[in-house]
Length: 283
Length: 344
Image 1 (cartoon, rainbow over the protein chains, first blue to last red):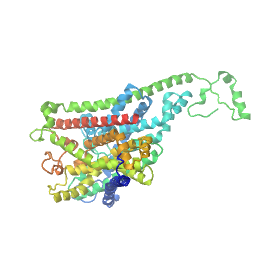
Image 2 (cartoon, chains in turn blue, cyan):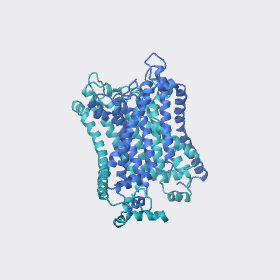
Image 3 (tube, rainbow over the protein chains, first blue to last red):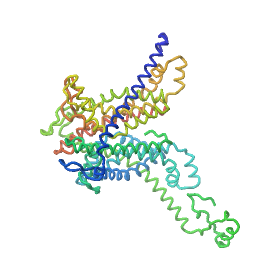
């Protein structure tokens, strides 16, 4: 600190720095609200009953909707959750129970790596694991790709939540003579359920908007289908395909779909916030 | 008897009571319901159940271990698959694949250099743009106003930025940002493509701010208050405390936050693919930042399903392998720094 400079100068500098920080900090909210506002104003006029209940019309015909993408998105995400949630929670339990085990070290490292894997790489890998052996694109392979992306978030949130629980809880239960698996499943997990749940919801919110891994797995489909062995449309895929198309009608569909996807993701995030108010988990 | 969800009443069997049981079972009810004990004959079931419990317990423990091991296998499997599938291209093109300057599937010539450069240019430009903002958010939330509605608002806004799907950023960038950039380009005399490396960097910089900001905020909070108080006691101003105490203390942690957001930027696919212009040319000239380009992720996204020949497909997978290795290394370094920081 240079104490030779006059105090007024130093105070002015400090004040100027504070103002610069505040300005910079709040500038970043501008593009956010710009984006959300833009999507809302563009999308809200496109949404109506036809939009929600019809499949997209071929080029040249006006109207049509995105029911295939809505159903597809829900199905793909649901199947992914069914696969990822039990595995993720159990792995989180293992990591929180065995902090110093050799396997825990490697598993934790793997989860860290998994969290950093670019989504497009997951798409490539699942293409070779499932799409190629099965002989075609399928919604199921998309679900597997998304499940792999969900895993690290669920594992992390479970582990962090369970770490916060006091050991005495487990010790008391064990002292009563309860078998280990019952201690975990009926005492420890219910105690941390809100933290675990918030991780699960957050992971669903994250993957609901993922597009890249679906490009080579679920692939997209202009028709409505409920068969997870077939290619299936999903909201992010529809947005990507129709946004880059040259037809105004398709772009309108993409705007509407963007609004729905945005609402879905934001709602899930708000939901998580409400649940996690109690738990200070860093994800 | 106490009601507990974990115990069956069968747990307290009593052999002698059972012999004259019906009386004992009925009498207590007559004068005191509290003392009523439900008596069950000890059956062979009891012994069976405990061995069943042991089996369950062992099953549960081994399931946990298997699932943790599966996690390791999953990551190893991803690595092996990528390496395995890129063998044809490694064989055909060798190491010079990495700095080959042309990417021409028609004549079967593949060089990754334009995409490496495109990825590095977009990510680093995005980093340079985003660092002042994320640092400002971190200092604002960590030091100036840790609580209150204003900082809550900012915190939630930053979280929302992370929550918006990347395809929506791309869509918005394509229709809002690109025309703006095009106007800017024609003003400064650059070729007005609109789409290009600069647009991609702008979109990316918005997307990666939350990662660096939230991490740095946590680390700034970790600075021991007695260090700051000492500096204040010596007569330092707020700015001097931030510059001379907080910054040196959190230096490595801030670096880790920047690294993690760099890892994010390198792997980001959809938003970049939509606004970068998808050209396999090397950016050149005075306005190279405004040229259309391609990143590793975007070229994979665009060409993977069209790759007809084995070498073409394999060359794309090798790009994926390079991307995977780079992001994993960057993420690992970042995480290592943070864990050391928080353990100290």
